[in-house]
Image (tube, rainbow, N blue to C red; front, side, top):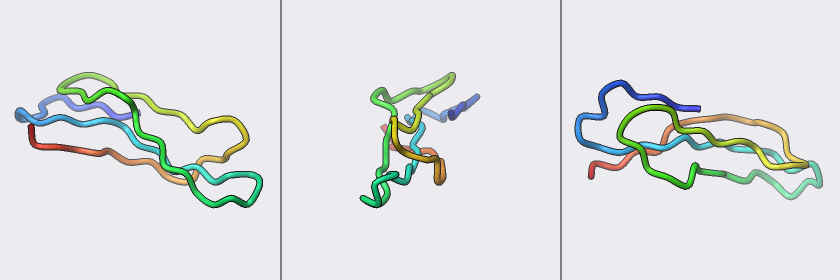
Length: 60
């Protein structure tokens, strides 16, 4: 999850890297909606394991 108190006019969304159980590598999932405030949530899909998380941003 990601939360921003003051986006300064920009947008953000949560992102997560998940490792596939079948050895197929790492998949990156981003929340579908750009936010300007509040929580952004994204989760690893079934048959994957959490690897890392971050925030994707854009200026407008």
